[in-house]
Length: 180
Figure 1 (tube, rainbow, N blue to C red):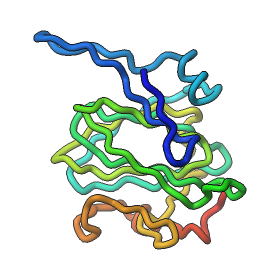
Figure 2 (cartoon, rainbow, N blue to C red):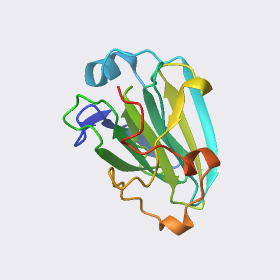
Figure 3 (cartoon, rainbow, N blue to C red):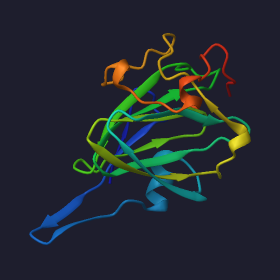
C-alpha cells in the first residue's frame, strides 16, 4: 500500500498494490499496523455501503460529540470525494481536499475525525464502502452546506445537475457550523 499525505496532511490517499491476470485481480485493502503507522492509532467499529446514481451528492457530513474517522473507497463506478477541515485551531481550518476514487483506480481516502466528508457521483452509478471509527449517531450528525462560498469546494458537476437530500440542501454554513 502506498500512503500519500494530501495538502491537508492528516488526510491520506491510499493506493493499494493490485495483482491482476486473466482471472481478475487481488489486492489487500487494509492492514492495521501499516494504517496506524501512516494514519494514526484508530480502530474501526462500523462498516457502511451506499449506492447512488450520477449527480447524487452526499455530504458534507460530520458528527460533533462522537466524531467519526472514515476510510472510504469505491467498489463500483467513480466519485469525487471531499474532506473539509472542521478543526477550529488547525492551520487548514475551512480548507478542503478532494480526490477521485473509482473501481478502476482502487484508491482509498482516510478522512480523520474532525473533518466533514462528502462525495458526488461522477459515473452513471457508484457503490461506496467505508469504515468508521465510531458508530453513526443521527442526533449528533451535522451537514455542512455543500456549496458554501467560504469553503469553495470545486465540485466537478454543474450545481444545477446535483441531486441532494433535504438535509444536505439545508446544510449549515461554515460560520454557523459547530467546530472541533
